[in-house]
Image (tube, rainbow, N blue to C red; front, side, top):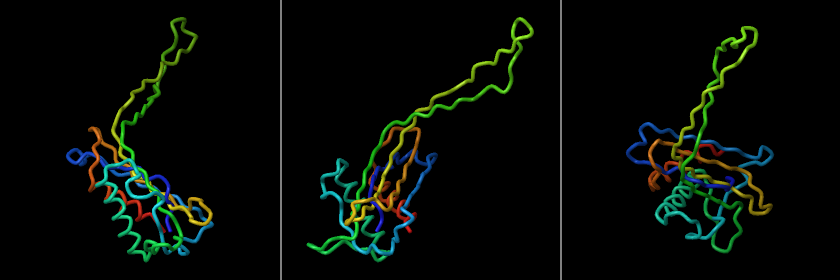
Length: 176
């Protein structure tokens, strides 16, 4: 059920997280009925994702729990799943430039010409952790649902396992 695309993670700062906030979004293919998906498998074997093993374990456990509450279970050994779950986690610095146009302009030195002032701008750097989940139809290989959660803060990012669980939970609330 769920599309499995990028699971990029939003596991961030434990101490400075009070001023940070989650951004959670999802998108689905409208023509696909989500009710047709009852079993899933992982798109890659455990240990092949390049994230901390504890975080990977927690992400997989939380996805399994959240999907299980919806009646979606791992496919039996040797059985073909209805969909594959893919996930990615990334952390790193992001940059945002904000341009503030000037609301006034002064006449030019010659009196008749008009010279607009240059806009002022500021570039901010912040850390972001992002977890993305994609659900891929096992028969067609096409993504039918994708969700991500990101967590931004002004402190350096660190991979925190409990944030991975929170991210999965917040993402999968958007499923359906």
